[in-house]
Amino acid sequence: MKILVVRFSSIGDVILTTPVVRAIKEQLIDAEIHYLTKVPFKLLLDQNPHIHRIWTIGSSISEVLPELKKEKFDHVIDLHHNARTLLLKWRLGRKAYSFPKMNLQKWLLVRTGKNFLPDVHVVDRYFEAVQKLGVKNDGKPCELFLHPDEEVDVQATFGVPPGKYCCIAIGAQYATKRMPSELLIRIIEKIPYPIVLCGGTADQGLAIQLMDYLGRNDVMDATGRFTLRESASIVKQSAVLLTNDTGLMHIATCFNVRIVSVWGNTVPELGMYPYYPETNELFSIHEVKGLSCRPCSKIGYKQCPKGHFECMYKQDTQRIASDVITRFNGK
Image: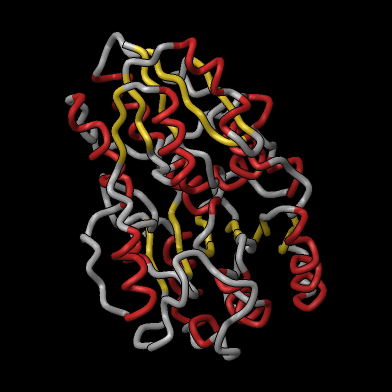
C-alpha cells in the first residue's frame, strides 16, 4: 500500500504530523509512506525511518505533479487541507482523506471570543484523516531524528554539560508571539542558571541586546550560529526550555524536554500547545487571561493591533521564572 502524506508548512505543523506518519507505518505493515512538503521543511523529516521518500515543492504542486501521478498512490492523507491540496487531490485522482481544519470555529474564536473548538489537540484531529484506514493514535510523542554529526557538543561549545543549562527560544515568526526584550530581561534576571539563547539569524539583534543589558557570562548566544537541526540538539540537551508559541517548542516535545511556554496573541485553545500525550506534567502554559482582544489572530501580526501588547507586557515574570527554576530541578 502506497500512501502520500501532505503537509506543506510550517515547522511546528510538520513536526505535529510525525505521530500520524509513525502510526501508519507501524499499524499498516505493508505501507510505503511518501511525504510532500515545501523545500524549507524537508529537514524536519530527514532521517525519519518511517518515510520512504520525501517530495518537495518551492511554490507550486506543478513542480512534482507529473512524478507524483506516476507513483499511483493508493491513498492521499491531506494534513494541510487548503485550496492547494484540494487541487492536488483532484489532479492525482486517488482516494484522499483530510482532517477537520475547523476554520469557521477558529474565525469565530478570533473575531467573537466564543470558543466552539473541541477540547482536543490538533494531533488528534490529524488522526481523524486516517481513521478509515484503521490507524489509531498510539499515544506517543512527536519525532525528529538527528544524525550523530548534528549533535552539538554543548560542553565544548558553551562550557556547560548537558542537562545543566536552560534554553530560551527567543524567536517566532510573528512579533505578537514573541516575548519582548523587557519581558525577557525581567525573567532572565531571576534565573540563576546558565542560559543559552536559541533562534535564527533574525533573532541575533535581540540576543545581542539581551546580553549587553544583562552583562552575564553565563548567558550565551546561539542565535544564527547553528542549523535548525543543530539548534534542536541544543534544546534536546537542555534541562528546560523557555519558549514562545513557536517551532522549537514543538521540536522540544520530540525529546521529552520540560517546557515553560509563554503565549501572546495566540491561545492554546487553538489546539497547538505542546504535544505530550503521555503526561501533561512536562509543560506549562503562561498567558494573560481576560483580555477582550485576545486572541487577535490564529497566527500573529508584525505588531500589536491595539498598540499596547498587554498579552505579553502583563505576564507575571516572577511566576514564569519560578516555573523555569522548578522545572530545571526536575520537578
